[in-house]
Image (cartoon, rainbow, N blue to C red):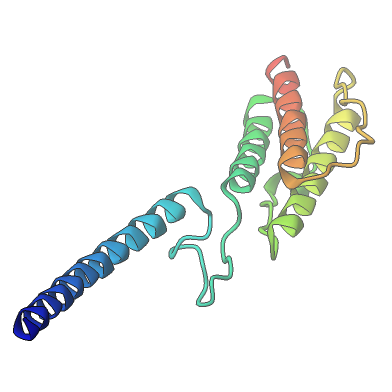
Length: 158
């Protein structure tokens, strides 16, 4: 009977070890899949993060907004007969040290464009100033995007 108990215990231990090894392998696969999924959803993937997970590139919505502003400047230069400030029109929109800094730079660029357009084009209408304090970056970026779209709409009517 003692031999049977030893055999059963040994079989149980070997079986447990095999299950533990399978569980560990499965756990590693799940972790790898989670990292891949997180990377697809996050702006801090291995391609955009530094050595300690620090972010080294800006959020995609900020890059898209910057591209819209540059496209708008090119349209203004090529499609209108107005003579705009060459420094403003040729200047690229710099990337900030972080997302917040980039947003400030984009907002300054939009203000400069609006001011230039209102000086040169008598029919240009500015959007009413928004005194709302934005509680997150997404709302502020959406508002800035609205301002760019408003400028584009008016430029297309020239």
